Length: 389
Image 1: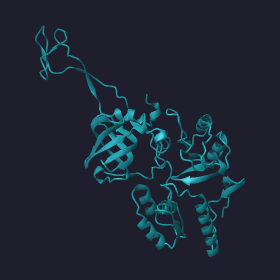
Image 2: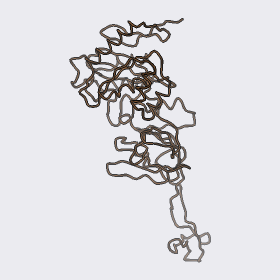
Image 3: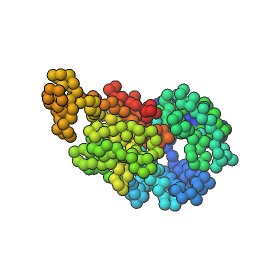
Image 4: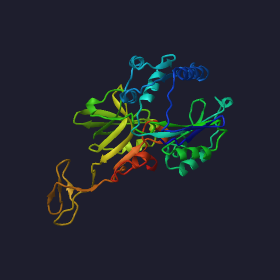
C-alpha cells in the first residue's frame, strides 16, 4: 500500500504532513485524549462572546449519509434532526450557545466530494490578533498572475484584496485554488507581516455545490437554485441601485435581482430584453420571492430592430411621408403607398455566454467562471464582468 506523505502545513516550525492512503484505528483512550484536546482548544480559542459565534465539534466512527451534507448546503437543516443523527451514530460531540456549529460539523463529515478545491490559510501570531493586517496588494496581484490554478484573489476593478478577511480573527490571509503545490508557493510569494503558521484544507469553495436545478414553481425560500427561462419584463432599477427583471418558464414567473454590491455585474443585467433566454444561478430571498443572482448564462438573445427612416418610394425614389400613427406611408409625388419603414438590427450591449458578479461580491461556494471555462463544452463563450465597459 502506498504511504507517500505530502506536506500540507507548518505549525510552530514543524511540518504537517498527510497521506491519503494511511489510516489508523483509534482505541477508547485515543478518543478520550482527542476529545479532551478539542475541548481545551475551544475553551481557550472560541470567541463565544461574539453574538454569531456558536462553535461545535463532532467525532464519528461512521460517516453520515451524503444527503446530510446536501441538505445542509442547499436548504435548511434543523438542530433537532442533527442531534438525532448524532445520537443514532453514537457520536461524541459538544455544542456551545445555540449549538448550530454542530450542523456545519456533521455536514463537513458527510461531504463526499464530486468536485473540490483547496485553500491554504496563513495564520497570525497571537500578539497580532485584532490588529490591522499587513498584506501587500501588489504581491497578491503578482501571485494571482503567476498561479492560474488559484482564484478569487484580487478584484482589480474594485481594488479589493479578497484573500484578506474583514474580521479580527487569527487568519492573516487565505488563497483558494486547485493545485496544492501552487497554493504553498503562493504563501511564499505574498508579502505580509510574519506568517506564524499555515495549513492547506480541502474545501467545497467554488464548486456550486449549493445549487440545484429547479422549475420556477418548485423554488422555495432560502434555497440556492439554477433556473432557466425567458425574460418577460425588461430590467428596471429600484432605490439603492438594485436591478431586477422577471423570468418565466412553463410553470411560473419569478423576479431576479442584481443588488448594488454586485457592482458592474448590473451592467450586463441591464442589457437584457424581453424574449432573451437565460439560465440564472443564485440564492432565493423569501419576501418577495426573488433569486439573488450570483451569475447568469445568456443562452439566446432576441434580435431587436430599430426604425432608421421612412420607406423610399419604389417609383420616384423619394422618401414617403407618414399618414399618421399606424396608418402607413404615402409618396407625396406619385401617391404610392407603403406600410413598412426601413429597419436595422440594433447592436446588443451583451453577448451569449456567462457573466458573474465581481470577486468582491462572490459567495465562497459560487463557482467562478474561471473554473467553469475548463469544464464546459467549447461552444460556450465565457465573459468576465471585468471586461464590461
